[in-house]
Image 1 (cartoon, rainbow, N blue to C red):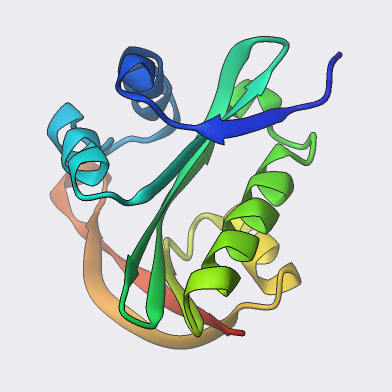
Image 2: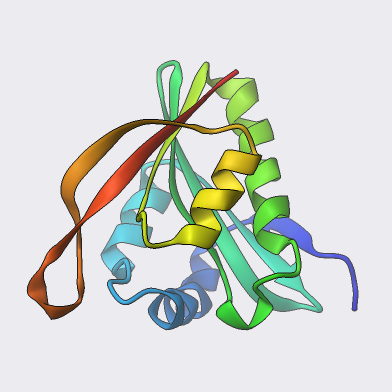
Length: 148
């Protein structure tokens, strides 16, 4: 297996990104969400493994704050360190552009919560009823931050 390649996300990547988004999330982003992020100049990257899309990440920077909006790795590739590598890359970019990086994460996503804690993020709040949940309910979001 070749080393992972992190590169800018391009409009031509959207079909593969949307397929992975739908596979990985019960409530996926829409094509419009991704197109708006591209048009808005957000920092967007994909990670490729053996020439195939393995994941993607998106950071929005406003003034001196960054917001990690989306980081997704193909479920079949979980446990191989790709999420950690993608997060480290996004943190380095944010560090060069911002003072603080924020994110929201579902408390039920224990793997992601553990990854963010290990990377130095701290829980700073809770957003009640932030995410849609199966069965029509809502799930809270942990608000986490990393100061540089």
